[in-house]
Amino acid sequence: WLGGREVNRALDLCTGSGILAITLARELPGLTRLATDVSAAAAGVASRNVARHQLAARVEVRVGDLRAPVDGAAPFDLIVANPPYIRQGELAGLDREVQREPRLALDGGDDGLTFYRRIAAGLAAHLVRVDGLDDTAASCVAGRLIGGSASTELLGQLLLRAGGREEAKTSLAATIENAAQSCA
Image (tube, rainbow, N blue to C red; front, side, top):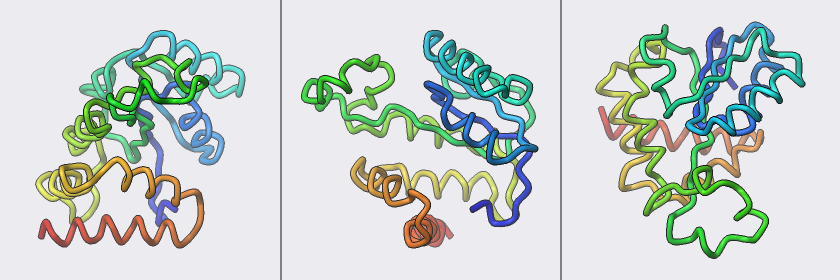
């Protein structure tokens, strides 16, 4: 799924329990991970889970808003995130089980895309350069995918369908390719 690219450093934004950081560290043994969360409580849970999986030497958890804890750090080969994505107006109608989660972990703003926009806005400064994709192109692609034309439903469908199935990966790749072509 990495297209043969070597991945040595990865960043996990909005880490929560740390599941993405832990999974990637276990799947990619040579990987060094940095995970961030704005919630000190969530970062504490992530740190305990990292220790439980004996990955403390390769996964560091920091407290702070999105990329703030890594400003000035060397760029990353891969950035993953599971940010809050629920529309603010839908929070009260969520199942009781979901409402037990901290509001900070759920509230994605008016349209559910607030954090996606914030993440996209700073990607270029924190990612290793990919051949043929400069800062302007990267910002344009991210804007097309996450901006006004994308909806929470679309992002949710892409994420749900990308559960390892080849057709989902192809669909997601086609969506990104279409966005890139519209930026050319």
